[in-house]
Image 1 (tube, rainbow, N blue to C red):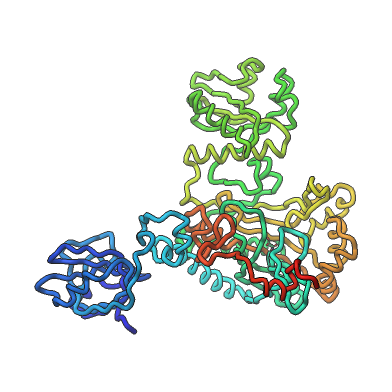
Image 2: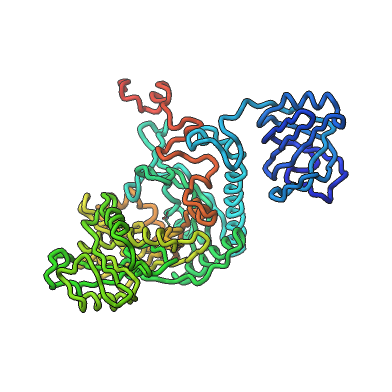
Length: 584
Ligand code: ASP
């Protein structure tokens, strides 16, 4: 090895040792008679010192030639520092340099490689390999590494077998859009990249593998949205001969272990909540339960008093913002503007101030007496000094709008502490979801999810009411994972496809292999997949999953470093049968 120690390792107890270090120049400070160089590697930074009269003259000349990001090998003696820096792990020592070799010079980097960098997002993405030298960025990937190791050790310890499934698979129309790969040797035909290994992991259960997991890349060609990556990583799992409770318990344990081992947090209770309740109380299937502010429905108290807007609404629903009763007109106007933004789409916001003296003041005083408002406040468990906010409209939209307002208030009132983690299982999702565009039902989770068995007859009469044996793990309002108990017999699977609008032929051509497999002794099974990038960002206290991916794509799904996607040559197009201008 070229080095005896790393740049993060030496302490005062090493004083007097002759060591060699290798690393990158973070900074040079040349004060004439004295010069210091901060040498960095992935373990830390160590200060080198060069002193006229003490350091060899040749070395002093060499120091003048080095700049930021040069790669050096130095040999020297560890010495106690005169001015110690207790912010640095190595801050008590410095190296009196005896020899210095420039292993490789560097051009001036396009931004300073320090935690407090002057580089904007774009330039740092273009030079991602330099950005990765920054401690802050490296630490995030280190967290990801520890997450990977802890996951593998837990899963393997629980008898889960890691099995790799193929990356070139078959395109199917369900779910998101597929990325496809043209086949040269089967001209005119295409593979698809997996959106998830769903069918393969189910086939592994048919093979008797019993407990499977894989940390696996998945690909979805979805529309661009902030913080969405076309390729992302899942912890994908499947188990046979289990109930839903077994699965929830197993993955509660995994989650606990990751939090404990990686960020030393003991998670509290994993609350179980029905999907219907999540929607009714929080207007969301992934509620942030770090704070209360639950929805209270007020149709019975607020309708039929002459206020047209409420009378015509399917749902009148409100939340109580504790201690906000003194908010000014301006603050309320800002909130009103917030909910009226096109992304949220509310028509207006009704407020009721609950004054300290027990009286009420509202934006709808014309229609409601003090007694009316008092009854609202009572139903909403409001105290003097609180503020009520009400929205009304079509149930689904108004819940969504109020959910946005609730989260916004949670932010304003600092109720969403990044260091507090509240896990929640959301259970019993609807099986099907009506799609107004295509005028047919879609599987809310995916078509392999089992309906609640006693509700199967409802499929024929009221399909929208049927519940799935599906569950999501939500932490702090973020969906971390989702899964379900699966269908494991041909007849039910065929019935499901029928309800999703597949003809028998379509079902057979797309998923015949799975239905065939179900006829050769498929065990009852179920599973889950965690969004690994998102889980890392949650534990890392960041809102961005990109930070936790070594080489991420930008918000336009481009890799600006390698400049991908990119056109391919005409020859390649022809070879793949994709150049439409060339007659066959
Ligand atoms: N394959 C599913 C997904 O990617 C997860 C599962 O049901 O296990 O969402």
